[in-house]
Amino acid sequence: MKLIIHADDLGLSQGITDQILECCRGALNSTSIVPNGTAFDYALHRIRELPARPRLGVHLNLIEGASCAPARDIPLLVDGNGFFRHSFQSLLLTYYGAPRRRAALAGQVRTELAAQLGRVKAGLPENAPLYVDSHVHVHMIPFVFDQLLSLQDAFPIEYVRIPEEPFFLPPAGPAWLRGLGPNLLKHLLLNALSARAARRLRGAAIRRPDYFIGVLFTGNMTLAAVRKALEVIQQRPRPAEPLVEILFHPGGAASREAALWDRYPAYRRAYFSPNRQKEKSVLMSPEFAALLKPYSVQQIEKTP
Image (cartoon, rainbow, N blue to C red; front, side, top):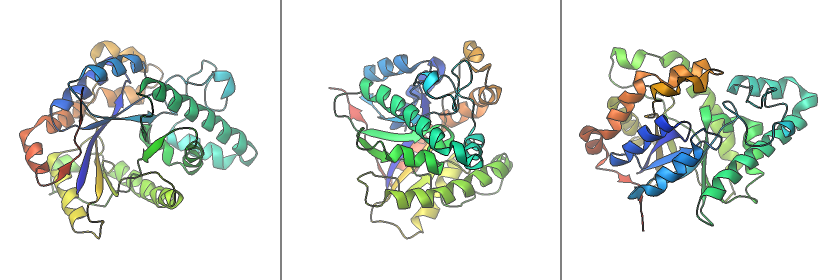
C-alpha cells in the first residue's frame, strides 16, 4: 500500500501556509496550492526554499475569494465585486435548477478552471505534471468534473483526487462522534459522485487514488481514525499496491488574518478551529510515524 499524506489549502493565507509547511518536517509529503489564495506567491516562494519538497498539487477553488479569471467573463460565478458567490450546494442546485443557463454556467466554470490551472502551471517548472483536487471537493460536481476533463489536452493533468472513502468507525469515544452526522452525509454524497467520476476517468491517462481517507472525519483526523481506515482498506479487494490519499487540514490561520474572511464567516470559523492544531500535532507525532512504517510512503523531492 502506497500512501500520500496530504494537506489542502496551501497559499490560502500566510499563516495557513506556514503551518502546513512545518508539517513537512513530520509525515506530510504532499500539499496543494489554492490558485486564488491571498498568499499564492508567498507559498510558491516558501516551498522552493524547503530542503525537501512535498508533491505540489492544484487546489481548485470555485467557492471562496476572488476569481482568477476576469469577473466580467464569469458573472454567474461571482458577485459584483468579483468574489465567488456559490457554495458546493448552491453551485450544484444552480446548474440543475436552471436548464437554460447550464451551458453558460459550464462554460464559465471552464474559463475559471483554465485560469487557475494556468496560474499554477506558470509557477511550476516547465513540463511539471499537475495533481488536481479542490476546495470542499467542488470538482466532484458532475458538470464541473466534466469541464475539468475537457482541459486535459491543454494542461498536463496527471492525477485527480477521487474521494472514494470506505466506511469505518474508530473505537467508540466522544471525539469521533463530533460532526459525524454532517460528515456522514458528505461521505455518502461524495462516494456516489466518485463512482461517476471513476467511470469518466476510464481510458483517460489520468491517475487517481484507489482509496481516500479524510471525509468522514474531516476536521477531526485522529491517529485512531487513520489506523482504523487503513485496517478496513487492508481487508478489501484491492490492487497489489493500492494508492491511498490521506487528507489532513493542519493549516490554522494566524490571528492577524481574521479579516480575510469577513465575506465568509463560516470558513473563518473552520480556519481558526483548534482542531487544525490537533491535526498538525498528529502529523508531527512519533506515533503517526510508527503507524506509517509498514506502508510505502511517497518520498518527497530533494532540492537540487
